Image 1 (cartoon, helix red, strand yellow):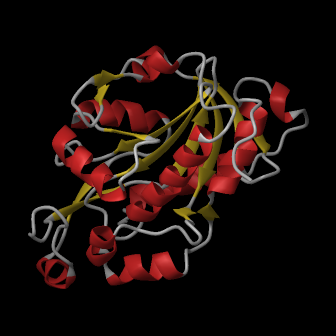
Image 2 (cartoon, helix red, strand yellow):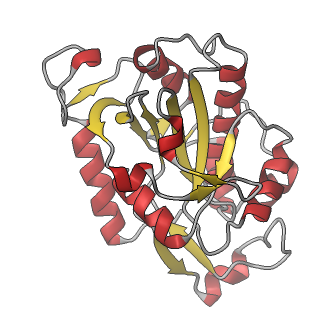
Length: 261
């Protein structure tokens, strides 16, 4: 994923936030505090504003979805876009693993897993549906939205959305899109992160970095869609990275449920 100078400043700011370690128990930190999580990432306690909770999104069938609907549940959320050739297919592989693990756990009624697009230009409900069909798995939900609504949603979590045009030289080297068969003309610059929203709708945990899917498989079409950088990230995920095991550890604290091995 391409990063502008402004985006890198945002990434460094988020990393600085995650580096704060305050005295206190992870389950009783004060609003606005940040505490290192033993399994990776950072525990937070940030009440989510109403405009973010009520930002209209849509699922793969075009049905309206808002974060407010998940009150009472702990929600795992990661950002992605279906035209990403460097990182996002691995994010989806991680979210599929997490969704499957939640579905197999005693916490399946207490935890929801959402992968929310950052691309309001191209990620229509029908494209999101075709993307998830590549995985053949529906234990996690894939959501999209308009550019304005996705900006409202993701800017709160620090994943500001920036449209970046590919150069002519870039386009000559890029694989064709897995669905359209054409080379994409632009990318979306954003941070890569996974967050937990607690049952009281507070931002409760954050981990940043490249997704590390371990031995999880990537659908054949998406693997063929990866650029050289994407294939390198798949074989050797760059640090910092986040894993499903870090999410499972955080869920134990935030949701009080055991998920995964």
